[in-house]
Length: 470
Image 1 (tube, rainbow, N blue to C red):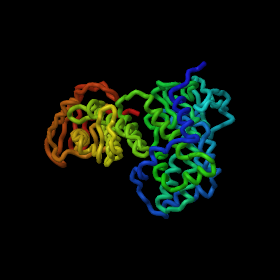
Image 2: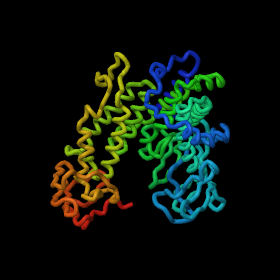
Image 3: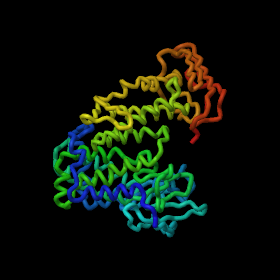
Image 4: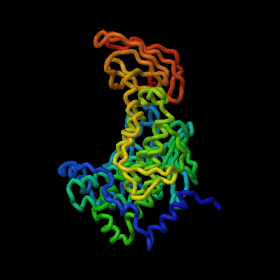
């Protein structure tokens, strides 16, 4: 007998909780929206959703796939493109098909039939089938699943647009449509499979997937870091007090909000928490999800978990001079930019009365991580030393050479002794010169370029590093 996974056990518990006699949801004990909800113009909100609503709810719900999909897919009809990114979805007017962005071939195709299958049980225990075309090298092309990947992403974006239309107009038709779509997404999500979505290896749905799950893959996303998306959480929060969930629940004879929370929102966080903490440049996505979901669901443990992970990332993964440990300005900007989002969603949070996090005994009252973690400002400003006078970045290691950043106020020498990079400088404006001496180690996304020299003068790079080489 196959062992029952942790997620399956959680799912059974949650199904019991949604039945008769279920207790009041913790989310009902706080005011909603728990997160700020910007209100755009009513005219703009209607224009964004009305053309789709005119197609009818049956069409909209059919857009949400019963099986999730896959991100990477090659084109067997041509050899253009990179990293299996050639295949694009045809859109909501032709939702079942995809095409190659280079040769234009449309899939599914008689020329390249998906005549091979993978049989497996989904996370609800239902038998499902994934079809694919096998390339001569053994790689698999899941053409219809490529379209399903985009359809679920579209549905998640559209449900947030419906919620925003409700906020902007107060029109119940948007709230009712949003509630119905969100519930449908949650129930189909509960049956989606774990998918190994690795561009460099054979990919596809993984039968009998159990924790610890593969690093490359996810349920919502092609990479687990984004597997608790903001779209559905914000949509739920903004529709919470609209009355639409209650109206839908009366028609269906069940607690719709409990189903959405337990079958999708809590389950998404539970899935993320099966992974070890990698403290990578993508990790702040998880911290943001933990904090946002925690605030909306009134789960302070989620919030504290996200905050503590962010603090540990800052303490352990940055050099003492403020530079991200990979030593590349592009990944530094990505990481600090994502961390800024974490700080923003945490700002102003207070724990429920009398709560202290069991792991530390700490409680939050009007949380302000930017204020309490001054190193964040140092990290954000430190990259100015890696910017030429013309605003282009110094492209050491994996960095996009065409990117730009803020420069230092004066063209002066700087030593980044943590990263191990020195900038020699003289002159200002048109006479500005810089010599960058790079002698760092390698901690991911690095090049074998220690002891190299980069020279800037006469308004341009005269001797460059190669930067990212995609």
